[in-house]
Every structure is written in C-alpha cells, then in structure tokens.
Amino acid sequence: MCGIVGYIGNREAFPIIINGLKRLEYRGYDSAGAALYNGNLIIKKTKGKVKDLEALFTDPKDKEGTIGIGHTRWATHGEPNDVNAHPHVSNSGNLVIVHNGIIENYDSIRQMLTSRGYTFQSDTDTEVLINLIEDVMKKENVKLGKAVQIALNEVVGAYAIVVFDKNNPDEIVLARLGSPLAVGIGKGEYFIASDASPFIEFTKDALYLEDEQMAIIKKYKEPEIRNIKDDEIIAPYIQELQISLDQIEKGGYDHFMLKEIYEQPNVLKDTMRGRVLPQKNIIKLSGIDNNLNKFLNADRIIMVGAGTSWHAGLVGEYLFEELARIPVEVEYSSEFRYRNPIIKENDIVMPISQSGETADTLAAIKLSKEKGAFIYGICNVVGSSIPRESHSGTYTHAGPEIGVASTKAFTTQVNVLTMMALKLAKEKGTISAPEFNQYLTELENIPQKINRVLENDLYIQQIAHHYKDAANFLYLGRGFNFPVALEGALKLKEISYIHAEGYPAAEMKHGPIALIDENMPVVVIATKKGQYEKVVSNIQEIKSRKGKIIAIVTEGDEQVKKLADHVIEIPETLEPLTPLLATIPLQLLSYYIAIYRGCNVDQPRNLAKSVTVE
Ligand code: AGP
Image (cartoon, rainbow, N blue to C red):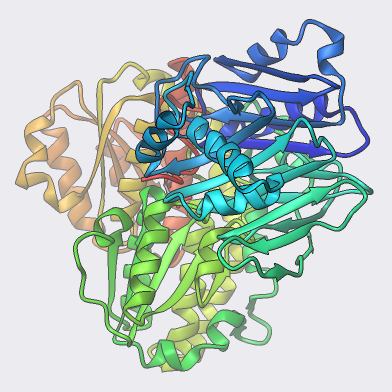
C-alpha cells in the first residue's frame, strides 16, 4: 500500500523524507514523490522508485527547507504515472497533500468542484480532496486545520493524509481513517509516517493517530489532536517504541525475507518470553486471563484472516479442537464480511493479522462487533488498527516483518495459537497437568530445533536449484501439516511466480493425481506423527506416476528415504507443534527457488505488504 513520510522541525527535511520513503518501500508501490518548502513550494514526483525521485532533485536549492512531505504510491484510482503520483497540489498552488487510502465519493465531489471552476491534472481521488479542502478554506474563510476537518466530514472512504499550506509553513496537518499514521516526537521537531521505520533512528517516542482523528502540528509546540467529527480535543498518548533501526535493516542478510526466516528461533523466544513458564507449569497470557470465562463459555471461535494469517488460523483450528475441545471455524475475512454470517453474542471472533491493517479483516471485526461478538485479536504491529478495534488480544512480538512474504509472522501466530490452546486445555482439564508440562518443555525446545532445521540451508539450496524451472508444484500434508502445505504453496507462488497448490494428501485421488507426471515436483510433509503410514502410501502413488518427491521427514526416517527423490529431515516433536518446524524448510525452498529465478524476493510483483484497501 502507499507509504507516507512527513517532517517539520529544524533539520533539512529532504534527507529525512527520501530515506524515510526508502524504509517504506516494502509496502509496495509504483511511483514516488516529495514536496518541500524553501520559500518556494518544490514538488517532484515520478513513476518508478524512490531513487528515481531522488535523482530529480538536481538543484541543491530544491533540497533546502525544514518542512516536507513524501509519498510512495500504490495505484488505486488512476494508473501509475508521473501525473498521478503524489504529492498533489491545489488549484491555487498553495496547498499540498499526500494520501494513503481511497475516497469513495470522489467523483461526485470532483463534479461539484468542476462546476465551481476547479480543474484537475490527474485521475486521482487525492487531487479532488486537496481542492475540496481549498474550496472549504475559501468558502468558510478558515485556516487549513479547520478546512481539513470540514472537508473530511464530507468524504466517504479510508484515508491517511498529510497536508501543508505554503503560506503557513510552520504548520502541518494530518488525519486518518482506516489507514495508519504514526508521529515520531523529537525535540522541537515531528516526524510523520505510515509506520515508525522512517523515524526510529531519530526518536523512539511516538503517538499513533486513532481512526477519525486529526492533528495540527507546529514545531516547538505540543501536537493538537482532535476528533474530526465532533472537534473534541484528545490528549496525545505517547508510547516508547520497542523496535530499533537494526531490526529494520537487513542485518547482513541478502534480503529481509532471509533475515526474517533466520530470526525465527529468537523471535519465537520473544513470543514465549514471560508467557511459557514450565517451572511454574503455567502459560501466562493476560488477554486470556482477563477474559477466561468468555473463552470457557464460548460456543465457538471464529478465526478470520487473509493469506498466511488464514493458514495460521487453520492450524489454530486443529490446535483448539484437538487440545481444548473448543469448536473453531476459520474464515477468509473477505468472504466472511459479505456473506451475512451467523454471529452470536457467545461467539469469539479472532482476527489474525501481521500488519493489523488488512481492510477485509478490519471489516470482519466491525461486522462482528455490530452483532455483539467478543473480538480477540492476534496481531504483530503494536498500536495498529486491528488490536485497537479488538476487545482484547495477544501480540505475536515478531518485530517488524519487512519482506512481503510472511515467514516469522506465520510461526509466531501459530506459536500464540498453540499457547492459547494449551492454556485453555489446562483450564478445561482436557489435558492433564503432566501432559501440559510436557508441551511447555517441548515449546521451549522449539527455537533450538528450528536452528537445527536451518542447518539444512545448503542442501535446500541444491534442491531449489534442481527445481527452479518447474512450471508447477504440489504441496501435500495431513492433519496439522495440511495448513503447512497450503502455506508452503503460497510462499512459493508469491515470490517465485511458479504456480503451486496445497492439498490435504488424501485429496490426491479426488483430482490432483491427474496432474502427476515426471514434470511435477510434489512436496510432501511426511513427519512421523499423525497419519504417517497413509502419507507414505500417498508418496507411493505419486512415485508410481513418476512424480518428483521432496519429502519433509522426521530425523532418522528410513522408509520415506527409499521412496523420495529428496528428503529434508527435521527434529522430532509433539504432533501439534510440528507446523513450527515443518514450515521452515518450505520457507527456505521458496526463497532459494525465487533467488535462482531472479525474482524480487522482498517486493514481489503485484504484491503489497499490507492490503489496506479492498
Ligand atoms: C503472505 O506471505 C502475504 N504477505 C499475505 O498473504 C498476507 O499474509 C495477507 O495479506 C494478510 O496480511 P496480514 O497478516 O497483515 O493481515
């Protein structure tokens, strides 16, 4: 989605804006632009990358000025080109805006403004918005802040906007509804961005605008925060961020995705830190503790998510039903929000989301709240929209996930779901105390077992090289490993652009087996637990049709070794914990195949890190 950076203070704005936009590139974009004020309003924008934008600032004078805004655009209205790139300026040339989101009623507003003599250079809803703000300023004879407030009460849609008036360059105005905005607070200076990564090196003190809030920011003054609707003054809630710049940098790896794959052992320790306590034989999750009766009396849990988060929900279904005997349904947010689902007050709706900004999942929450359900969010980004819209929840503590393809987001989500299912199973007595303790002890072993899986890296690179030109892949798994098969297939297709499908292994006979021939690599998760023998017979069916088999097996397995073309061994663990290990080789396999195919692993084509619009 779009990325926004703004600055007002006492430093040169240019490097802060440009480097800030580079930190937001992971969000996916097709064009970039910036506006600075140095006594004149300097606006430069272009289709392409931030480096192309930087190259447009040839005159050193254009880089001067201590107020500026920047933008990376993910096209929604109007094709990706220079004219449609942000920032956009009003007809008078005085007001300039950057915007993330969609103004749904922009067409009718554009017609109204056109009838009042306004003209438009671009096809964007954003240019309409900045001229609506200008029109209000003139009609109502009010300053920028008030004009923004009045204008936003006339628009329908989602937005995060940052605006300034060249005739009043000591003030910057921002507002949000549905798209995130963070404000970094320095000494007499303010940084504004879609997330904290552009300003974390300057300050860890930040506030997040809530939905339907706006802020008028002047250097050396407290930010003035208001409700857009009723103009109520809001006290700023300033938090100290726990992310540091090195967490965001690649840390020596070639790509963010590889860094994040290798971070998983440590990140899972963070996810379990202070929560999994084998010595006390307890799992501490304040969200559950504070709402225990809701969970113990819930008729069912409805997990909603998209993509990888939906796959984590599928693992959650096996965990909650197997361990805690609580009925679970797993829904795509995009389907759930529109199919008029039956939601009861005794249901717990559990949105799962890395970014906390997925529009469909937010909409599913809104629908569920209207029907009285209790919302328990599982999210990674602290302070993002989904946790703020939820009644309670658990953060995954995965740290920033920059690579578009989710990796540590998935394993930490599964880890949280595992902890929740175990905690509730203990409370309900559906597992014994000794069994519970066995799980806690094994959970503590998982990070070092993941390190052992990562030792297969070189061998997985060789397998990847062997299959890099395949046109299709099948991924098969049973039980807890069925969602892992889906996740492995998604990883491959989204970064290598090879078509891949995940299936329950038993589904082979119902169609997919027709695809098997010597050109079809089949990844089979055949770990020792669960329906191992049945998976082995599936492997035999594939082999007899000349399919190429890449098997994920438990260390020491000799039976599958005789059948498969390639075998990747992972340590033994308790069956419900297998997804935390079996996923890792599939992440590496997709990463290396994509590298060999010369794909942009961190920013795959057509994809965005966070789908904040429908
Ligand atoms: C998975 O690798 C993709 N990044 C995508 O499917 C993602 O999982 C999906 O868009 C949901 O995002 P969220 O977890 O931020 O809500």
